[in-house]
Each structure stands twice: as C-alpha cells, then as structure tokens.
Image 1 (cartoon, one colour):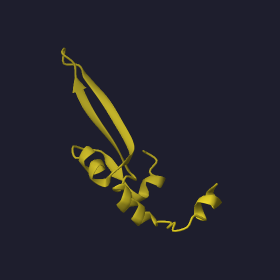
Image 2 (tube, rainbow, N blue to C red; image 1 turned 45 degrees about the vertical axis):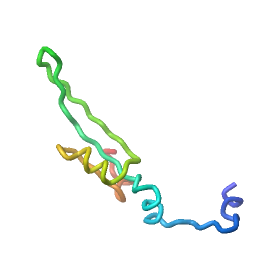
Image 3 (cartoon, rainbow, N blue to C red; image 1 turned 180 degrees about the vertical axis):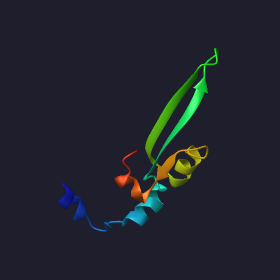
Image 4 (spheres, one colour; image 1 turned 120 degrees about the horizontal axis):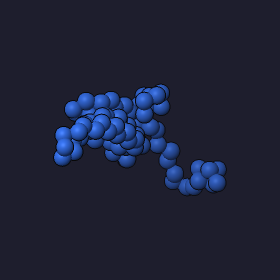
Length: 79
C-alpha cells in the first residue's frame, strides 16, 4: 500500500519541519503535576502527560512547572 501511495502523481513527501508547519507542530509532548484539594482540605497530586500537542500548548501546560519536548520526545523516558 505504501508503494501505491508513493507512486501517486503530484505527491510530495514532506520533511519533518514541513510536516510540523502543516500540522501546527503537533509533535510535542509534556508532563506536569498539580495539586488539587477536596472540601476537607486534603491534597491530591495529579500527573498529566500528553503527546501530539503543539509546541505552544506544551509550553503553556507546563508554565507552572513540568517538562515539555518536541524533537527530543522520542528519547524522553518521562513521556
């Protein structure tokens, strides 16, 4: 099937930077931890990890603390 796709007329295989431009850079990921409190004042720690987001969204998600990556996500053991 891949050979059939690559043989289509007018097909252009995009490089990674070009794909990010088209997709809005949706190849980034992040992990962040936050604390919430219940009505009795008990604290609960929650860790959120997400991949496939834009660079801007990843940076925004960790603005209060956490880690984000884009090109290096393939080697990010925490993601």
